[in-house]
Image: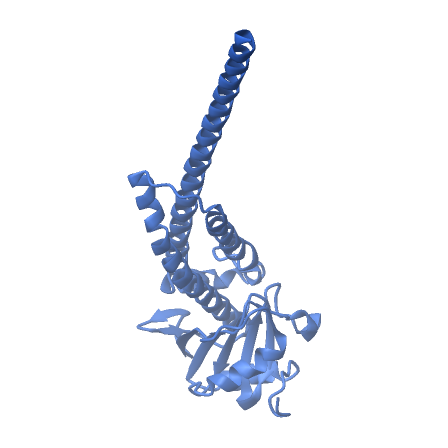
Length: 281
């Protein structure tokens, strides 16, 4: 990593002031990995319980989230995506995606009120809290993007399982069925636990005046609706896999009962045969 591409917390406040001198900001969120090790960046650099704010080259401001998302604010269009992603690589934990998902937003400054106008987000002024609020909702949207594509594939894969139940063709494959259930539990854990998709950010505790902006951001990115859709699909996938597993276990138990009955019958036959042979002598 080059010397001019070093995370700089001390200058981030100055960078925010520089951003405020513009009429428009360009925002881009990057999904850079499963997790980001933000603790090594020091607790004093933590702007809230969920994000770390840092300065970047070209007087940009970045917010890093522990669940693997970086959001960059710039006065100029962000074309050097690879260079931005490289900045985070030393802090990425776990698997890095082959293709990096992104989310973009335009922010219009010096507006009469905070909110949305056309496809742009309007801000009356630039503050750390406003930038972080935008970054957090965009980060949530990107995490939803990640899970929506995975769950859509998984949802298609359970259709043959449902058809097998309808046709009464049950083939034992407990390992894959348990894998489906386990993957769903992990997805629910990330969305409800690490990311807290529908929970209000902690920064609103001391900045209640920003709640209208937060709810408009949530509506614009359809966070709640998309989360509800994911939850419904997860429920269908889990219920289908569990039903198939229950039917498979039931059939397995029935087979065991028949095996026991057959063994008892064979034992009785052998016993009767032995008695008959003995009586014949």
